[in-house]
Length: 369
Length: 249
Image 1 (tube, rainbow over the protein chains, first blue to last red):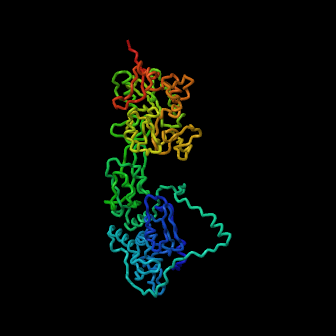
Image 2 (image 1 turned 90 degrees about the vertical axis):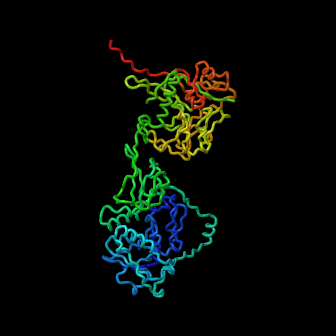
């Protein structure tokens, strides 16, 4: 078993900028990690997620809270036994530890996806509640694992495997037998020479331009969702079949007759809703497994998001298809109405020319392109 | 007060598109953004189809429907400036209501899809401008829609206001053959090879444009809409005549 080193953990908390909603999609205004952090080590400022490594205790609750899986703490990859896995808090000493248990820095840092991964590998899960979580020095919280366990249990219930849901065993130990909680590292005192001090006073540090858009960091790009992809794969392993019940994922329904497909696709922060342009049609393609259920697409008229789908999920599906045509006059792509050959603009031009001709020649000119 | 008007003689117009080109060069418009265009129209079907054409600038209506619908009052009719309809690019939000409302189809919005490849906006990317070609007309006034527009606004013909406004006070006609006024003539009028276009003051009873409208029975297009254009058309229109099959006898 790897020795758990609290001093080492915080420095290894990583943010994947390609998967972070705050970095890539400020319009989504996500702050799940900052809300969950017990020591306020995460600060969210317009498009930047700032991690304060000196405050962070490495509990990884932010990792579990991130909806897209943008945060990663390598130590929070719990291994698992062949048939059963027992997860223990990192503060439990070796003598008190359950035989064969896997130690994690904090039980609250185990995400629902990780639980599903262990379950998908065929191992039952037991979490040991040692009773000191509520007044843990590293940020107290009565049942930090509750959300993840609940989410995993819900998914299992939908798969009719309610019996496999993670068990929480209440086995309290006195606080005195616990290892000290990981402490916040305070910034080292930094001394300045006189020369350095004056230079620092005379030249203010340049303020970072937080709204800058670079090629590597476009303002509105699609966000990667490793957590949702992993969830889909683990659920598929749990399900044992290629098609899963759609109730595990959100569903999107087209209610209007002519939704703005391009708007809807660009509002989606992930790759769940995409627009496919084909020569004779535009297709709105939806992958329920990658949907965050944020509801951003509903801002485009004629779309309704349901938290749970019906029927079976069988991968990517076309939810709306719009016939498109190329105008023979101006070569623009347009969505034709019934019996419409040329686009509205060219129709107006033709109409004007026909009217002018009739007017100039003092006779009726039939409209016909 | 001056009220600028244009007269287009369809009997003289050859549909050569020189006006379209001159306008695009004068105003640095994007391909597809033809403030001045010549519409080609087919009447009948093959093999007896007839081809006619209609030069079409902005009609600078006296009662413009585009101004009525504009939600931000970005487009306005300036009676002080010869009754020209302008777009204030500082106010335009690009909603395109005016494009729907205009019965003549003379308002333009640069679509994301380029009309020709490669997209010149990518070839000459501009800061604050839709594009930045190497040569630009030095005249620019965003409040009157002159110059190269910023992104996301509607643009339209300005009757070459940057030239017309320099004309001496009270002049009746801007004639490209008159050395005194030729610098103030709109680009399309000045370039017209068969001199099918005339430009002058409709409020001046002595102007050539008024004489032409009266003598040659000038008409305004789509008068039933009540827009009352300041562009008049003369003549019955030239055409490429329909093929007349020879009789067998």
